[in-house]
Length: 201
Image (cartoon, rainbow, N blue to C red):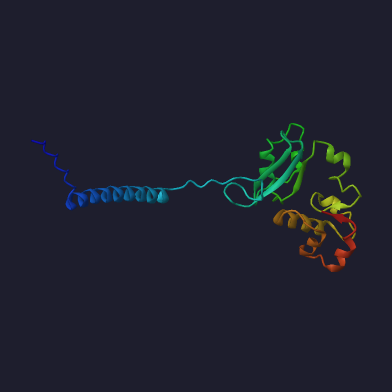
């Protein structure tokens, strides 16, 4: 008698295949939902804002700034970046304060500063030796550094007009051009033409 052949293996039923396929779909769907939730959480997470100071005309807070070169009788002369609207007292403080030989009375601490200005703090006796704050190298009177006595040496500028020029400078900051004199009460186009070659900024 011949041995009986082994019965063929029963093929997987359609129901079993369907169940396996459904399980795979459920797993893939769960992974997709997990990844999507992770992406959404990452997108909604707060991002710290970082401001990079590139040495431009604004400070780290984004407000306007002025560059001032402080020299002379201060502890640490150098270039300083100050907030817009800063005054001489702020520049002197940034430079470490006056040195013992500084002529503090010659410095108007309340004067507003302008961008690109050089603030020279004289030593005691320096102004007296020069007779007045030093004029420009070509002999012209510097509207931004001259005192009332030096301004009074200009034609048609008496003590009262010299005071007006200084008051305008204290209220508005440094002169940026000779034409700014037209903003000083009492100075018109004719007087400006008289002074144009005698003053500088």
